[in-house]
Image (cartoon, rainbow, N blue to C red):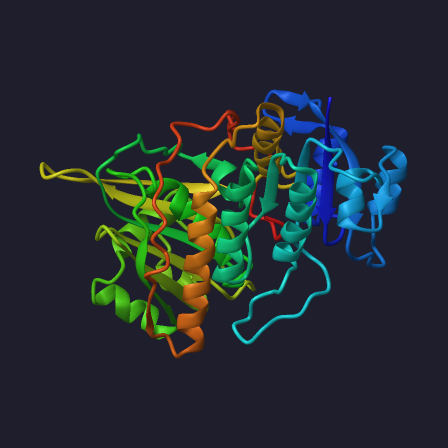
Amino acid sequence: MKQIAAILTEYRHYSHADVIVGKFLKGFPTDEGMRPARVRIASMYVDQFPAADMSRDMASAYNVPIFGSIRQALTLGGDSLAVDGVLIIGEHGDYPWNELEQHLYPRKYFMEQVCGVFAQSGRAVPVFNDKHLSYNWADARWMYDRARQLGAPYMAGSSLPLGYRSPWVEHALDTPLREAVAIGYSGLDVYGFHALETLQCMVERRIGGETGVAAVTCLEGDAVWQAARAGRWSRQLAEAATAQIPGVAGVPLEEVLLGPAVFLIEYRDGFRGAVLMCVEREGGFETFGYAARVGGDGGSEVQACEVFLGGDPHPHFSYLSLNVEEMFVTGKPSYPVERTLLTTGILEAALISRHRGHVRVETPHLDVTYRSYESVPWRPTGPRPVGASATPWA
């Protein structure tokens, strides 16, 4: 059984370490029942130990040593790489925020340490990086390039592309998409990323594949609705998405998206995407949605769905984790890491736009081109789970 090192910022109840590493330790709840892990967590490095820490108890229960450095976790206390895969979960913990309101998690530092062991050992193993690669583009690009340089299979990203969809919408490759909208909620850094990955996992399947992003603009408040009236994002698509969501179907968008923000995304091939966010949590919208205009010269149709999460025990994280496990077992990523490289850069550009007074930010560096995979190995298959709803631990 392949041995995996878990590199964590912290491990407490409902943290990402809990809902990911916990499944590798205990098994994966799925629509077909519990699936035992095919790999073993062989070591942990934990950066912080809050009062509610679970890592020591879980490590004791499952006979997993906690090492004092990332190098030791990867070498199992020896002199060279001794594991077959690495889980980097740099999410949650006591870390500062910067002026863009980005949480400065040490994901690049974790990746540097991991890659240092790879380089010293003369070989690399698969790596998964939870959520966005880094809070800034330079670090994210370095992480991506360094993994390629060392030959490490690499995956990253949100659990949202592996969430439940109602009704099921999955564009075939090379679908003639005209424009698309994703809807999300909560903070622009922490959850704007999830909404971006919801959008990107869909629109990357358009004709010709992904071409990259030319410019990004973030708007807030009344400017969001003014932009809709000016045709900068499609109110029709946003309403189509909310029409699929129990409790808000037919409710005016102004009553659904409280404290609104929008990311206007101009792709290099002329495609337009938008991410709408309900920033005010109290009494507001708390799930995700997607809608796209699809069709060639002969006409178009709107396809829309809710993208929702499964509540406790977070089955969307089961499907994310099963796809990560598949890479650990096969050595092949289950979906392209370039998606997360691009969404990382879009999010940074949106927050820069906001900080500069909601200006348009040109992004020539986001010339990220790739093709989506036909499918992923593990997806939800059943109906909406009992109690399924949005959760603050996505």
